[in-house]
Length: 318
Image (tube, rainbow, N blue to C red; front, side, top):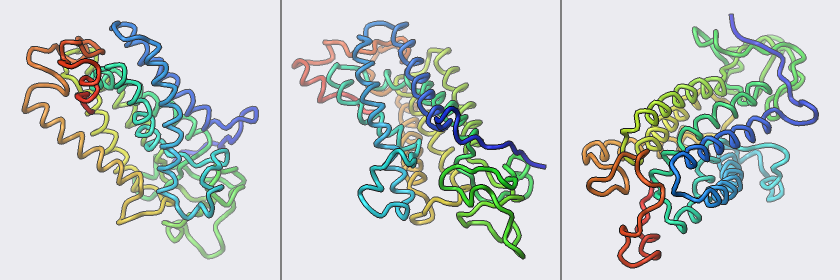
């Protein structure tokens, strides 16, 4: 027994994948703005400008991540910039979005660890909503599923129109004399076979992570940087594990490009969490500072002895 439903590639000429990605970003941004308004002290225009640049950076980062994971799909510079043909990786989008927003945040003396703590639940809900679009179109089909995981896999039926990059489409029966097990680890997907659902696994994991991050926010005792470090350690580990069930991504040293990024992020965040726990002081915090959610989102002038330039140069990194 397994799961199945007809994939839908277009709703009114629009891809559900794109709708899910855009909606996830907007809902996550809205959750961040709501927290900024609640806490006060930070100009909303600064946040809006940072989010605008984050949207641009997310697209570029997502494309770069995809290029690294699928280098053989691109044969020219034109192929690399043809975004309308698809090919974006969510994990790279997070990294690109944060990097693109940093200059504005640093220039306006934003306390980065506290700000990223406020943004962390939005990151998680963005994944949850984005993956709904992936599930609608059957994007990110994984390897052939066997054993007990098959109950959570997707079984293709003849005639189903599969997502771009997953073929043959419309779905065809297996070649004569071949079995589903024999078709494992190849970039072809046939009717009658059941495949892993990395998008579903990522959806469930991100939903659990969202609950944990909201619990951290509600208790309001976590030190600066803890929420975003929990997000990085959890989601990095999650993607590292889940992506082993994927079959079409090219691998370098046994891992996909996304898995290498995920492993680095998970390790860096886990080590930093241990350091924060041992020191009993959050990132960018001084003695006597309040927990992350109770502290100001903008660094106080007293933290700088030589004006704005000094504040920028001493901005903590998350």
